[in-house]
Image (cartoon, rainbow, N blue to C red; front, side, top):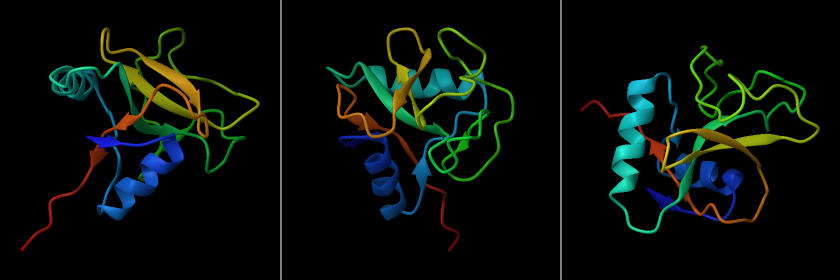
Length: 122
């Protein structure tokens, strides 16, 4: 769990740690992340790695680690965000586990993110 200002900065911080913003490939992972973050007092929502800021014309979006959208999403209003006039980033609401779209450079209320850092083999 990292404290950040905007989603782009959150991804930069994850890369410095050797990973990326979290990929959420299924409902189990979504629930696991939400349950873990709910243990932290005062956190309302947090950034994950689903976005289109590398290619704003990409209406489907992709994960921060470069993985293509594989079908699972938990957006409040739509199965996936669709096309926007601006680059979008995604956050999860810790109260109901739904996803919502944010401006990638929006300096707002979301200040936390979850990084996914691969295990290093010894």
